[in-house]
Amino acid sequence: MREGKKADVLLGLQWGDEGKGKIVDVFTPHYKMVARFQGGPNAGHTLEFEEKKYILHSIPSGIFHRGCLNVVGSGVVIDPVIFSREIDQLGLPVDELQQSLFICRKAHLILPSHRMLDLVLEWQKGNAKIGSTLKGIGPAYTDKIARTGLRLADAATEGFNEKYQRLKQEHLRLAKSLGFETAELQIEGMGFDAYEQAWFGGLQRIRTLPQVNSEVFVNEALDKGARVLAEGAQGTLLDIDFGSYPYVTSSNTITAGACVGLGLAPSRIGEVFGVFKAYCTRVGSGPFPTELFDEQGERLREEGKEYGSTTGRPRRCGWLDLPSLRYAVMINGVSRLIMTKADVLNQMESIKVCVAYESGGERIEMLPSGADPSGMSPVYREMKGWMSELKDAGIVEDLPVELQDYLELIEDFLGVRIDIISTGPDRNQILFRKGTGVVNRV
Ligand code: IMP
Image (tube, rainbow, N blue to C red; front, top):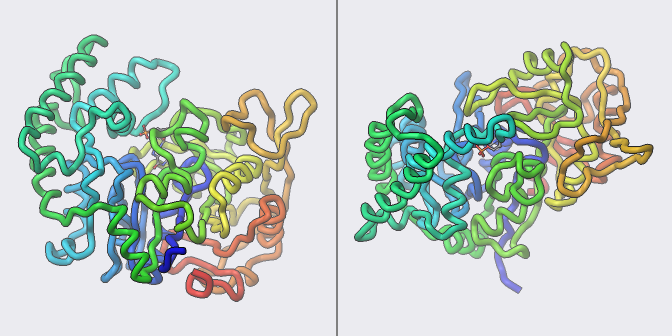
């Protein structure tokens, strides 16, 4: 049996936007290392402290804590333009950055032509479009799996420019066959050539950061007894294999994704923190059984400021869906639950929770296989709202009794305890279950 610590995993149990960034930020003082294992700039992790708001896309959410090592793992895809812009926004001195941010050499690069293809392929899908963030995620992972992609390490090799040109020409050919010329397309408000120039500039910049093999770096840290937190992006129901395919992202967003995206053996996984919102949201297309199309949905959107942090798109909103949460808890092996945005429901007189789906007279209490509940209608349990403001800090047991009833219903259904409740965007707005806390059990 190998000595050393196990890595804990923190991930989303819904369709992303569960508020993971804030939770990782709260946890970071208790960890030596925070490592991202999948996704890329499609993610938008929002952190708020000292009255400032930061949105991280590719950089792990531990970056604002001195002494924390932040790793961008082999499973992540990197757009050098967005990455270097993100570095600028951090405003950290170069030497500090070099001691706190590490990128895996095996991470794949998102080329400007991947971004262009994302646009073209979404357009081609017409009404069946996925609602992608258009950050080039799908095409970059496609090349990775097709074994034609470029990795960060390739940038240091002879012949990189030729390889880049060859792949780009392939992409242009495909775009052209679908009726598009690069000259017509804008990426982040820039023409293709301007974006490409910024891309090479960004790549040079990234190459000044320390590069590691994340599997060795992370395992060695664990061997030495360091606490490691693997930070997931998007959410379980967007997983490429277990989400509502094809309306998913192109990576494994689940616990197993931490194994392949960082190079961790399954036996090295410790606690799995599952983060879910007190209600549901989804951006982009795809099934959403508890979606609200009325003013209640509008109210959730406004109270919860439910607009995409990466794209600004309004998020679809609806009630909490327990059958899909049960599926997410199963697939991830969640050991501890964290509920966020409880405060958004503060002024709701009554709150509904989906406790089953019904189809042809049959009652289903777990999301059906394939994560597609189309054609099923949600069965709701209605609960009394707490109609009061929540404390910023303290213990869960201090919360209004109606909210405690809400928590109990969820815990009974899922068979896992909710240890932490987030009651607002700030780092300090957080309550722990009596006798737990991050430190006690982490
Ligand atoms: P892509 O990963 O950008 O191709 O998008 C695929 C689907 O995942 C779309 O429905 C997006 O809206 C959704 N998605 C991707 N990243 C996130 C995220 O970080 N939060 C929420 N939804 C996301």
